[in-house]
Structure formats: structure tokens, C-alpha cells
Amino acid sequence: MVNKNKENHENKENKDIELVVLRTVDNNMDLGVITNLLEENNIPYLLRDHGTGGYMRIISGGSLYGTDILVEEGFFERASEIIGSITLTE
Image (cartoon, rainbow, N blue to C red; front, side, top):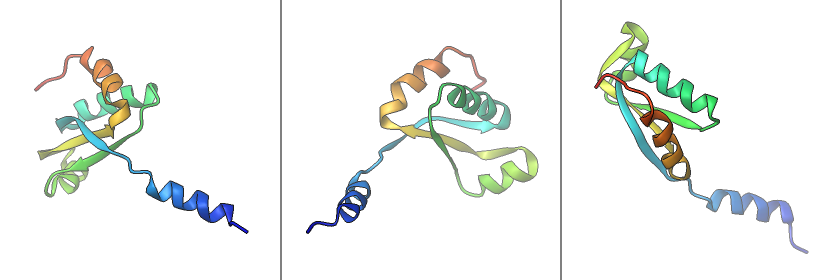
């Protein structure tokens, strides 16, 4: 007899998610605009701060090191089109 719960669990573990950097931002305004657009369009994302940037962003509202906004590879093209339609400071 095969344990189907075990098979389902193993299949979920074997599925790798490939994350790619959508944009790197260095201020909370740009970060907020992009993440709000992604949320409005149901695109999941993760934030990755460089160095001590996460602490700096919390304390001072921005990071000198920048924050990467990562999306799953399958959402990258759609997310790029959405944020490409706005102008951000760079």
C-alpha cells in the first residue's frame, strides 16, 4: 500500500522556485510604489536587503545599500511590464 500523503509531500519538496531580481531600489518611496503595484496585480514578491540595509531601512527609512525586489521567474515578464509603465527616480 502506497502512502499518498507521503508522495504529495515529496512532490512539493522537489518543486524548486526560481527567484529573479525585478528591481533594486534605494528608497522607501520607490519600494512602496513597486510593491503596491505587485500586490494590486497579485504578483508575489520577496525583499532582500544588502548588507545592513534592512536595519537601516527600519531605522532611517532608507538604505544606502539598496533593496532587491525578487519575483518568481514565471511572473518576471508581467511584473516588468507593470513597473515599466511608471517612472521612478534612479
